[in-house]
Image (cartoon, rainbow, N blue to C red; front, top):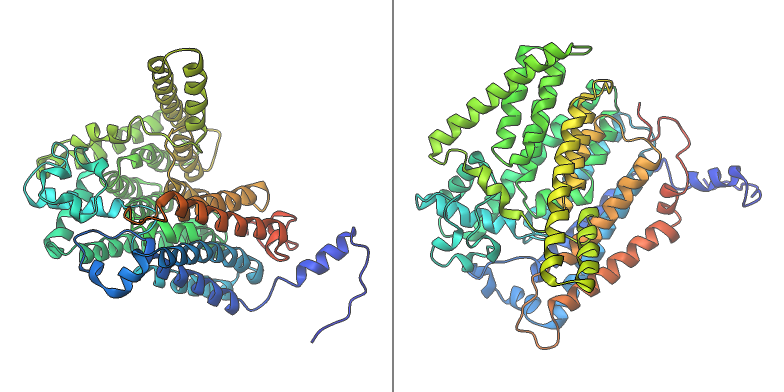
Amino acid sequence: MNQTVEKPSRASSQYRRNLGKRYVYKNPMRTIIMGTIGSMLMTIGSFGVGWISDASPLNREPLIIALRYNVAGIVTCILLLAVGGMMMCREWLRLSQKLGVWDGDASQWTWRAIICWTTPQLFAFPLFSRDVFSYFAQGRVMLAGLNPYENGVSTINNFFQYGADPLWAQSPPPYGTLFLWIEEFVVRIAGSNIDLGIILFRLIALFGVALIAYYVPKIAVLHDINHTRALWLVVTNPLFIAQFVTAAHNDALMTGIALAGFYYATKNRNYRGGILGATLVTLAVAIKPIALVLLPFIGLLWAGEDASWRRIFITWFYVGVISLTELTVMGLLSGFGFGWIGALSTTGGQYIWYSPMGFLMVVGSSIVAFFSSSETADFVKDTIGSISKYIGMGSAVAIMFCKSWPEVVRRAGLSLGLVVVFSPMIQSWYLLWVIPFFAVTGIKNNWELDFYFITTLFFMIYAVSDQLDVSPYLKDFDTNMGRLLSVIVSFGYACYLVFIDAATRQILRERRQPATYLMVV
């Protein structure tokens, strides 16, 4: 029933509270439905601008031809992708408003959102990245009995037809032995059917998502953090769904296994939890070696609270021996040894303009190039990139020794985050390595939450406009025009959410009223 409320002065806090109540504590069903529609729009848009290999028989389907090889179809798909992605962002924010108190009912609604928003993405063409095609190509190298750390995917016939980025033609994969085995397993099943291979890799990524969804609430409970809110922060995030499901990044599996290790190491701060935690994080390293940053924190959890430095160094030694032994065994079984160490340089020298260090590299080298030679500018750029990486790793190591900080899991996330921040190349999915560690230890309802929201919006805008598979044979339209169109639409939608939308603009304007609304409980 509508109630007539005497409207006080617009400047009064009472008016603002009454205004806010119009948008919270309501049935989330409409939000779930609208988010699902957004996810479906992204899936439909992927049929026109998502990645597809030349070897795929889908290229001959009339609908795909109509969407991918004429300007009207491509423009329509770009609009659907951009609008759908930003719709999901809006409904993700609205879900937090409508749930209000993070109780049992909120948990059910959160899981409904996860299922409904994720399911359409399972049927989308790969978006935002074509790494999944390189997984398939590297699996073919494995199946041929070659060492991927020594042989690029160009050693296999018709590699370009299977959609792999030319970057991987002669480059070793920056992945661990376990993931190489997974790649080979997928190719053994799929054979030359690239589309089946993509589906299998997406299911593997979905398994990683399931691990994250399972262990995030459990770790949150161990830290006295509301488990439903932590789940909402991580798994319903549209950027999470886009990168870990749609793009099928192996980072999902790495993160899920690492979180499992931290759960058991946190729950059982003894040799059982320590050994299991170290083993699981080592498996994460065998997916992507960046997880090495997390291993020392398993040792801190094993040492226990208020442990002496002597005990800490002992548990670090144990963790190191366990991890080194397991990695050695995997290296011997595969015959690749520690080839992945040399492969870590694959992305060396790469940078991106929006990363702090990447921006500094661009500005610094440009200034030097103005007053000096291009060779000197390149030297300055490479020097800045190298120094920034050392700063990131040095900061990560320093946090290991911050004994006065009690939350080891949070320190692990901060350590990983500093490595990312000081990297010249920051991909949108790198954020998803870090967020679970902060969510399970508490993201407060202040600037921390605001920063998370704004960062998610930024990376979603970048994601939906960065990698669009636009045919190079069109006369009146090209990839840059498609990106510009996507940026205009998604950025305009984001500005609407932040400055105009009466509901979502409140999220960044004022704190929610009850202490348990979005605060740690």
